[in-house]
Amino acid sequence: MNKKQIRPQDGENNIEVWEDLVHIKDLVLSIVICTVITLGAYLIAPNEPPKPLINGLIGAVIGFVISSIVIKPKRTLRFAEEREE
Amino acid sequence: MELTLILEMITASVIGAVLYTIIGIAPGTDETAVLAPVTLVLVLSGFEPIVILAFFISAIVAKKLTDSIPVAIAGIPGGVMSAPMVEHAMVLKKHGMPEVSIRKMASGSVIGTFIAVPMSLLLANLIIPLADVITQYSNQIFLGGAIFLALMSKNRWVSLLSIIPFAFLIQGLRIAYWETGIVPEDVTVFTSFFLGITIGPVILKLAELLSGKVRRQLPRYGLKEIVLKKTKTEKGFPNPFKILDRKEIGTTSFSSILGVLTFFMSPVGMTIFLGETLTSRIKDPVKKATRAISSMDGLTNAAYISGTLIPLIAIGLPLSPTAIGPGGALFNAPPVFTPENNIHHMLSTGDFIVATVIGAFVAITITFYVTIKYAQQICAFVFRYVPHEAMLGLFFGLVIMLAFMDAGIVNVAGVLVVALVAGFLHRRGVNYGVQFMTLYAAPWLISVFIPGL
Image 1 (cartoon, one colour):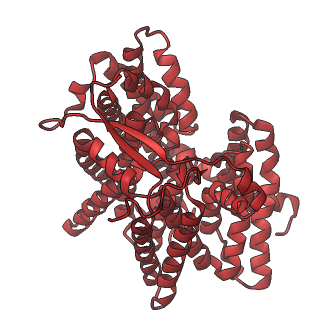
Image 2 (image 1 turned 180 degrees about the horizontal axis):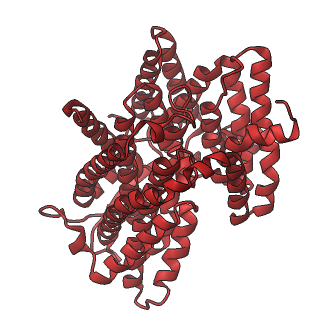
């Protein structure tokens, strides 16, 4: 989980997609990771009905986890004490 | 009923509740986009229909319980449905009581669920006698539904105008697939078009990013700053009836009942409308806000459950915005479910009751408890470790896989076309409801123009 300061705070570089902020390069990376693993898992499965799909689903989850580890969320979290405001 | 089946249902419900507790909290997750693909995959994987239903009910209850958490804590809607609550939640946040918001909203959800489950079963049984007539005219009803939803939406003329061209696009692709022999003549590609519509707005946005000119013009942001307030952890098991006062319970119950009765309407519209009318006379801003959020949350929950269950039990066709959107896979997921043979036909009334009660009970027990106790910790975890990019990537990957499964590589392109058009229409104000109704009405609508197809 060492993704605190991988990328320098490169100013204003994020755009909004679907109500939250993303970095374009990271988004492309995540889409590629997820699609390749999902489709790859689907294709290598034996060709008996539910198996490719279940494989693909597992692949999707793996892709999701890998993306989550590689990419840092574009949010900062600050805890405020209760007395504030 | 066999014990193993009940255990399977409980397991599926637990998985659904845990998964959608997390997804619910992640900002910006649209109900249709996150519920439909996963349900679809489960259906196609060949799980028992009753297990899938339990999963689905648990998933919606959990998602609806948690998507209001980021609203309360950070003012970010966790889903489309919680957007109307932002304003009221911000009032409470300003008064330094975000945890009050969460507890009131979650309790509202629980009441909504308690009311919606028995009422939906009852109302469905009242509609059953009409089911034959409704089924017979289903094509016309879908077209009527598209027109009705178009007229009810903000951009009604664009919505109305989009129906026929969009139907031509969908049916045109299907005919092309048949002519070229990509799919056999008796197979109608449905699932992947459905998902194409679902993910349309995102695909359009991504496509625009390919253009350097657009990319440079887009507003740029730094990091999204989210401020959380430290709160104390609750002790013991929370009781929703103690968290809400008597008036709040009254308003919440009333709006939940209305939510069930208007199951065929758009839940977001009803939430905004009722939430405002029921609380407009309250002066104290804090009281007004707590009353509004508890009743809105009750209503959305009730509308979601009834919108899924009533059409499912009574008719077997997705005749409500919820059924046609998030619950779409329960009605039509060829080859497992078709409009002539889906969960409606496979389960008995007893099965419906068992699956719904197990799903709702598991989700409420797990999610309500967790929500009230650990809302802040979960929020912090999701905001800190789950990047938005990974969520988008996950759904993109799923859609591509399902498109490929439906009709090979050509259909990946086909789905992208559908998604781009759907995304464009969505941006111009044509909502999901209109597009999904059009998807269902397309074969019949086109055969009216071109007889013999």
